[in-house]
Figure 1 (cartoon, rainbow over the protein chains, first blue to last red):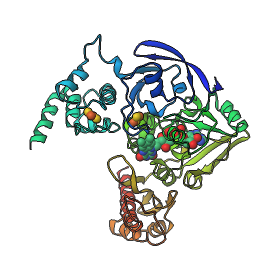
Figure 2 (cartoon, rainbow over the protein chains, first blue to last red; figure 1 turned 135 degrees about the vertical axis):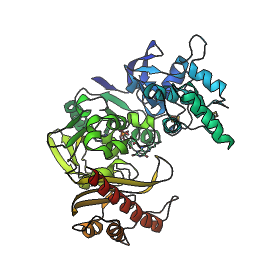
Figure 3 (tube, protein in one colour; figure 1 turned 60 degrees about the horizontal axis):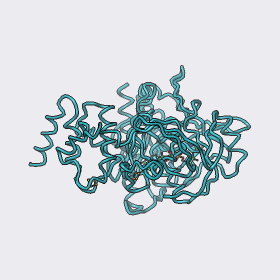
Length: 173
Length: 288
Ligand SMILES: Cc1cc2nc3c(=O)[nH]c(=O)nc-3n(C[C@H](O)[C@H](O)[C@H](O)COP(=O)(O)OP(=O)(O)OC[C@H]3O[C@@H](n4cnc5c(N)ncnc54)[C@H](O)[C@@H]3O)c2cc1C
Ligand code: FES
Ligand code: FES
């Protein structure tokens, strides 16, 4: 049992590194990441669970880190946007967002990348509709989503690239 | 957002959770947290102690009994329900509806128990569970009791749960031979806030033998429409007769009005979704 208290010592593995910190029970996980650990790649858009900017992968599941308390993450393995690039080299999904103009201001991008990462793990060859459903919890105020969908489709296996071209055709019509 | 200072505890068993809940007046169970976290942010309820039940193995199982009934633990998430072969085999409609709750992130955390215990009239699962004649299995320090889903939802954010009680699981009877279920929502956008919805379960054997029709968003809790059910019992399962029965939804329901629709609009749309839900249930029954 985790003892009752307003503060707790938690151990969390984030992007392969173990952190041990004392947290207040009332601290939101997103604030733990951003303020306590200075991992500011994870953004806060709405703070009500509606925008997805704070999305991370926790124990293999895509979650919104503004909808959890820090002590709930005790013992968890977390992936954030900072873990995607390898030694400064963008990973294929990040590269695809850059190539396909899948971002403008970039505010939603950390959450979109984590949603895209999760989606492609669960379903390596998604249709356009599956991608749109997969990023339904993530709001983008800039791109109109077309280029984000294309960015994810472009790295998806199999006929992903052809479908990505299909989207271009759709837009031109 | 900065929450009010709060205590947190993660018990190791349901028994331990019940002991803590019963001995701390300001304690509340924390399940998926996909509503409670926002409640705490907005400080609309005062909670002194959060009892995190989300990881309790006892609340996280899905079992199908020999008679085909399904028991789902209170802390099973929507995503787990959606992917459960046991749910998909006998109660596909529960898997399908769970897969349409808001978005992937919320489906990965939100639980069937939390969805019911919140008793938010916009939540997806309560009307379906009433239509499927589910039983809510409730535990307290003193023992276990069972409440029909129909009697569990008492009002806006109000259920039959007493302080110190936990919803531990939900039992859903098998859908009988010749039976089917339907669920139709009129929503603002895909998988989002709903204007009005209807859930139905039928059993057809030449004529409609059994029928339950449940409307949601026309009252503070899901309600059965007894007049429509009465009109359908014993009649042939035809589109015309179902349409005629749905027309009985009238001034007996007084839906709320809000930015998404007036009371009258909701009443008219209730007839449409109720008709479609019953027809979908009949069709599913005919396919089996
Ligand atoms: C942006 C957003 C959109 C949403 N859209 C939808 C939607 O379209 N449809 C929908 O259905 N839901 C929606 N939800 C709500 C979501 O489904 C929640 O998961 C659900 O309302 C509560 O379930 P939970 O497991 O997260 O419970 P929690 O938030 O942890 O708890 C909710 C309440 O129930 C109590 N409780 C929880 N479990 C138990 C138990 N086993 N016994 C006794 N009491 C218990 C808690 O104390 C609390 O009061 C949305 C949420 C967000 C943030
Ligand atoms: S900041 Fe978490 S969902 Fe918007
Ligand atoms: S790129 Fe600006 S919000 Fe998405």
